[in-house]
Image (cartoon, rainbow, N blue to C red; front, side):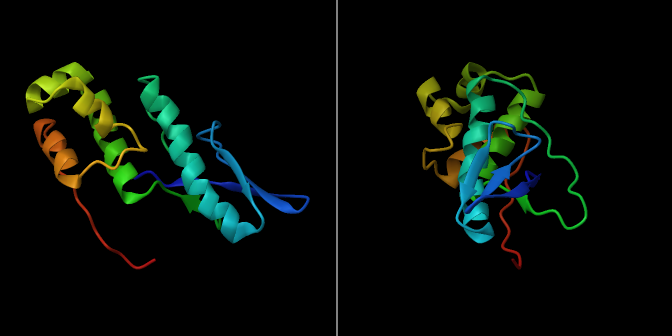
Length: 140
């Protein structure tokens, strides 16, 4: 759902990682493997800017043949999916808090990609938005 194509560029002794769809996400690593590991954090940080600014998330473009993609971690992806559903429905945090019977700071933490929210909280929020949370384990 949030698989963003990356551009890997050898830059001297490091590999530079950029995302055409999320220009705020830039990182590097000593080699391609390390650069791709760093790319997850960079992507999450870049997408968090959209959440903080209450802007729609950029859609990932289709990767070119052989182009690598990076996605947020499972918890962060669930939070981003919840944020996207809320944005698509035009629901603000205060309304989501009202529907859940929570205080607004509790809802704020749901969208903080650095906060270790519990999946059951995300699942409850998804439910009041008419969505469900699906977690799968697939081959790497």
